[in-house]
Length: 146
Ligand code: ADP
Ligand code: MG
Image 1 (cartoon, rainbow, N blue to C red):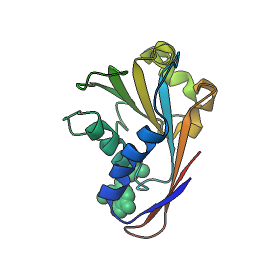
Image 2: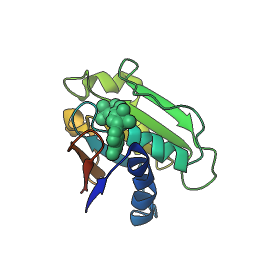
Image 3: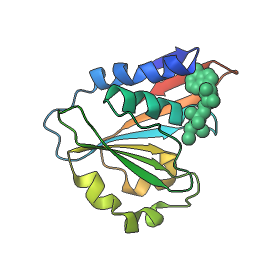
Image 4: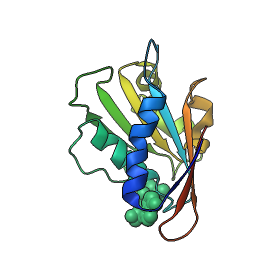
């Protein structure tokens, strides 16, 4: 599916479209959303929309220096925690291992959104949602969902 958004808010609203298209049922592992696109494409903006949709009130910033942040999901439902990971500074997945990434990905109560996920493909599960964001101009983004 390909979408074109004309503002950060439209990119954030796509979170709802995606969660409706991929309703979680019977999954045995975490729901993983891999985000790809240049710096400033809108990956973090998308995560903000996603977190807002799940009722998370904290301000989401790119965890470029912390690598990973977790948020409790207040809306009771299939999921308990949202993990936001930014792999911009990583060469491969190995730096994520000490953070417990394997257990995080194994837990079906988790939603894991990963910026620059192409840098850690070795640890991505067999099935995940991939979102590629292309910067078209200052306010327009082409968003492809695989
Ligand atoms: P990334 O995490 O991919 O590096 P960010 O989400 O941090 O990117 O930054 C995207 C920037 O682009 C923000 O400043 C945002 O306001 C701006 N922007 C402008 N138009 C859009 C759009 N259509 N979708 C997403 N972000 C947009
Ligand atoms: Mg970012």
